[in-house]
Length: 171
Image (cartoon, rainbow, N blue to C red; front, side):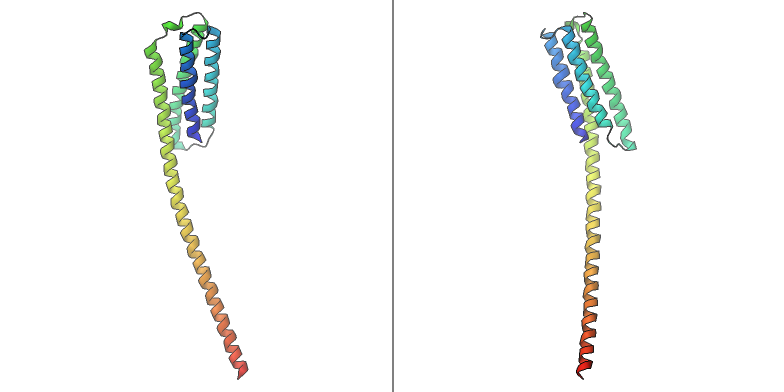
């Protein structure tokens, strides 16, 4: 399910990246641990995103996907640059909180829009499928009715013919 992968990406941003930054600020992680955790989280995001984009996509979906792809790459590069800077000795306390919140907010908006788009598309596809299904059931029902009526007509004609032959034989 494509929305599952998108929700996993949001979860990784919220639970792994932000949590890692908070732990580093509280000095629970040293710089190399911080860089490793961020790199692993970004690798997971890339994997989920690759899985999402590997599904069949219609032409009208591609602009949404391309926009989100750009946002994900930008956000991942931002977090990788933070990880490298911290690993090179920059103090994590000097991290711009507003910029961090903006990055997370932007990626959330982009992915949530894509989830909403996927959900709306799935609802439309479902309506089309149900409409097609109902038409097919109606056509099959009509054909079955015609077959039954045809069999009944043939049976009637056959019995009438047998009855007439039987009456002629009795005379």
